[in-house]
Image (cartoon, rainbow over all chains, first blue to last red; front, side, top):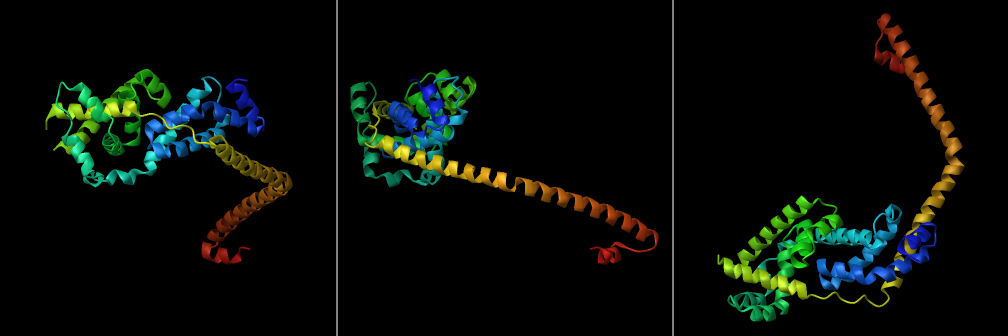
Length: 188
Length: 102
């Protein structure tokens, strides 16, 4: 039974059939939420994604694959997560601890790609990355993660976010510039 | 600011982001989602059942009451306007008319 058929059954009142959609797409949704919200909150946002999908199931027309429709809901839930946590943007860099400062100081010199790779695997990199991204607006964060961090094609990002290609380009470029400004303040 | 250093910092963070792996789906995830979904379905079903019952039970009475209220308002307005016109022709005002209205 394909996804569209399951959706029809759920809408006809067979609520338990929705479990099949959850089973089939849970890993994919977790993969998305873990890229955009802190890993310890990924399951919570994935849970909200499925509940929201159930509430909005009547709007799924079957014109695009169910996975795409679900991905759009997951991305919106991730943006909502950051809107709800806008206060955390006020955390100062110094509050992250001495470890992060030392990590920045010890970034390898140029022409040492192997050293940079090993350096990037350390926990401090994740702390700084999350802190810097939390300074961005939710949409900027979303588009930057998809284009710059995950390397997704601009056209695909536009389709998932419901944006035009030019908007994706502009927002992505602007978000990256903002991120570099934030990172620049850490180096000053 | 050293742009080369900034580039390497950014590159390190991008490398870190690329190396992040998604956590596994927690045990019992589907059951938790289904509990929430069933609760929504019941809440939603309960609301519509109540709405349909109320609509069936009270719609005829409501329609009659609304028609009567609108009719009364229209009639009152016409009477008031006519009375106000008559009284103004005889030197009366809205204040004295208001006291005469039901």
